[in-house]
Image 1 (cartoon, helix red, strand yellow):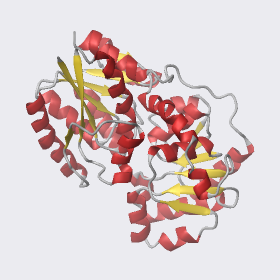
Image 2 (cartoon, rainbow, N blue to C red):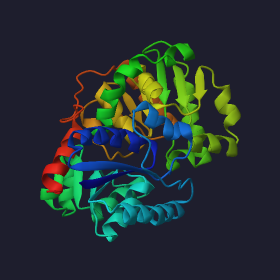
Image 3 (cartoon, one colour):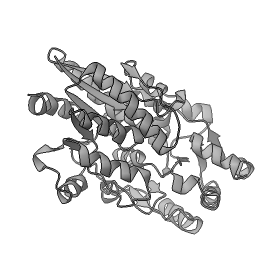
Image 4 (tube, one colour):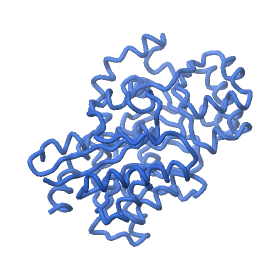
Length: 367
């Protein structure tokens, strides 16, 4: 019986691993799939709620790493994950995405001589000020296999001399989870609870250090949101990091004073997916939400100057916006005047990426 371990740490990881876990059920006679939760996100609404929403089992191992600096968090993951690997002796470790848990687990597994695969490999923003970019580069540098979501990833990995025979274009497991959960999302009562109607509101997410860790930048963003609130109701589930900084920078009162702005605690996946699907426009600095809005055909303004997911821009739904007040206001005005039309969904974003990954692992990697 082969042993395959998937490592999750932050909320996007759960959406990427859930389809893989389901896909491995068809191979129960030859392989067992284990889930290791590092505990990088420790708030229930940011973590465990996703297990419930995506019908994932309880993790086989929970490491309880918690919040810390990048170095401390990575070190804790390495120490604890080494114990898991020595106990379980897996045949393959799967890491997903670009969080600290991703590269820390990959480094640990590789140093123990365990085959390691990166789901969502090859993505590059070419902006090394982003912590996630360093995680992506470091992870791909040591992993044995890469499962990729879009054509740019193949180009990037080739340029970095990654063995092409170990690169597999499989699609996007994030979109697998979206399709899996969409029926539940359609039954969510979140719009009723918030007293909003489909396509009459905007949705915001914001968490990147470059946007929320600087008082001036954060204030400019909220001034842009204030402009948007004059055109649409604005729904904003606030990431803990963003909420903490609003208070520390003395901007909490300003945020609460904006008319037509609904500030919420972080939401579970089903309610958030319902909001995303029904929104008129999404403003975000998230990587995954660029992909999810692309699959839904919802227009998205990404409050960044670079993206590691260029296919979302090429498909016609996503627009990069310099995260400054004047640029945001102009982008909002243009978006309101030009509804999304003629968009496309990237190849293999069809809900079956998890099955492709499991089949490749069983029939090509672990043979």
